[in-house]
Length: 313
Image (cartoon, rainbow, N blue to C red; front, top):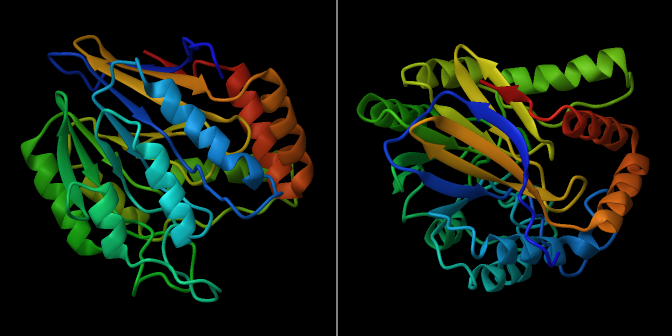
C-alpha cells in the first residue's frame, strides 16, 4: 500500500481511559514464511504483508507496537530472522508474546529456537511481563507454551504462576491491556454459533483450556482489555465485564492490523488494511475456497467488516 488509510472504526469503548492520549498498534498472526507457498495464509505473501504493516506504522505517532504472536510460520529460525529484519525499521518499542506457531511442537521437522530467544528478542526481558506504554500498562502472558509445555497441542493455557502475576498487576494498575495469543470463551462461542447455524462441518480451532481461572483473575481488575489473535478475525467479545479485542491477521483476509487510541474520552479501535483492493479480493477468494473451516472464518470476517463498528459506546 502506498496511501495512508485512515482506518475503519472497529470499536469505541467508554473505558478504559487515560489522562493523556496513548496510541499503540496491534499486529497479529503474520505467519512470516520465506520458503512456503499456498494455503489460506497465502504464505508466499506473508513477508510482503507484514512489511507493509510495519512500514504503514511509520508516521502514525505510536507509543509502541504489540503482537499476540504467530510471528512465524512454525517457529523456523530463518523466518524469525526475516521478522527481525522487518522490525528493524520500527522507531518505537515492539513487544510480543508467542503464538502456538512460534514455539516448538512435537512432530516439527526443523529446530525451533528456545523460548529464551523469543523472550530476549520480543519482550522487555521476561515472560510474563509488564511494561508501561504511554499512559497504560501492558501485561504479556504466554498461553502457547514452549520448550516443555504444550508440546503436543496447539491449544492454549495460562499457568497459575502467570495468573498470580496478572492479579498482582491488576491490583496496582487501573488501565491495563493484557496481551495473549489464545482467546476467551465468548469468542469461541461466536464460532460455534456460526458452525451450528451456517457451516455445520466447520471445525473449531484450538481453544484455551483453563478459562475459568483466567476469567477469575481478570475479574480482579478495573475494565481490563484482553488483546488476542489466533483466529484471524476482527472481533469484540465480553465476559464478566472483561472485553476481548481480537486483531485480524496480516497474512490472510482481511489483511490488516489495529490501532488503539486511549484517552480521556475512552478507547477507540481502528482497523488498518495492509493490502490493496485486488489483494483483499484475492485473499478472500483463496481463504474462502481453502477448506470448510476457512470458508466459515472468511464469512464471519466479511460479516463483521460489513457491520463495523462492532461496539460503539
